[in-house]
Amino acid sequence: MSYTITVNGKPQTVDADGQTPLLWVLRDLMNLKGSKFGCGMGLCGACTVHLDGMAVRSCITPVASVGTRAVTTIEGIGASDIGKKVQDAWVKVDVMQCGYCQAGQIMAASALLASNPKPNDQDIDDAMSGNICRCATYTRIRAAIKTAAGLPPADTREV
Image 1: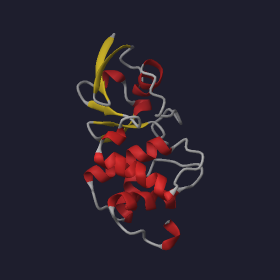
Image 2 (image 1 turned 45 degrees about the vertical axis):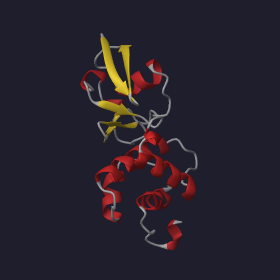
Image 3 (image 1 turned 135 degrees about the vertical axis):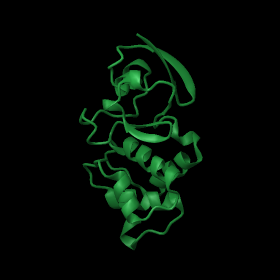
Image 4 (image 1 turned 180 degrees about the horizontal axis):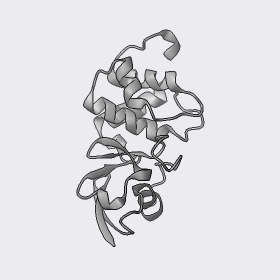
């Protein structure tokens, strides 16, 4: 079946079975490789994208369910002010190690700051839970979110 979905501000038409996960449509049919396959069950967060600004797991989101909602991927998040601040903070704080999960982390952090521009530690923990980092860069992730929000880190070990 043919679906027209808006990805990173551009309408694109793809031919796919309606139950095809959005992740595979993005990666295989649109050549947007930033969203990663991790678990395939929506548990790790590596595949996180935005649907109308809300963080969702694209590995369990059927393309047929997207409808007219706008999809934003890691390739397009820097076009928004919040996404750009988050990406810049990630670099400033030097969050990345292996980097595999970081697209999903950035997408979750951007959705958090869009809905809560001044999150406290519990807000960050709640929003970021389920985004797994095998390199355990969680303190740097928290510091980067606070940096993007213009908040001081909770302690000096976070910077």
